[in-house]
Image 1 (cartoon, rainbow over the protein chains, first blue to last red):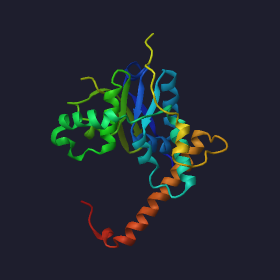
Image 2 (image 1 turned 30 degrees about the vertical axis):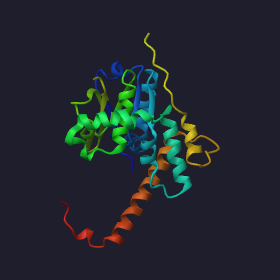
Image 3 (image 1 turned 180 degrees about the horizontal axis):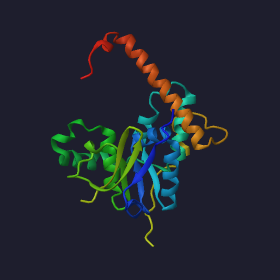
Length: 171
Length: 65
């Protein structure tokens, strides 16, 4: 049953920060969008009014679609992604040969538990650093000594608060 | 007014080709689509729980850490 109290609370400067940017989406965004579609639909529409483009990468698509029991379910998941995003960003050869090694160096021991998908999200953010922000609920894999937190999105539920950070790569 | 750089990528529609599935004949409204995906996700979770209890029948006796 859908949580009727669900709502999204944005940081006061949210639209100032994201206007005209590409927002790179992590896997949890797609799950939450289907769990709380009414609030997320409003958020997506309002963001698009502010000239925001939503993008993702193939490893995120794979994370969201894996486990689909049938072609029908797979198709539903792909249709959800298609409705939310504007573009699937390519994983360029530079990401693995240049950016991921740089990130591994920067993360130091913290990088041990970071998934390859998260490294590729970070590499995509590095490559498009002037125009792109990352929206993720996973702050542990995007440390503030590498990325900067620009603003936030709170998903307020009946008995929980879930926080998405909006991160930039600026160094 | 500042404009966005051109982003090189591929349209989400091409995902259907990548995954070799047939796209739906008509678009489903987002709310209806979300409800269907949510039901599918719940079914997947139930199936995983069933497989877990078959494979690890004593795991439910363990205390959560």
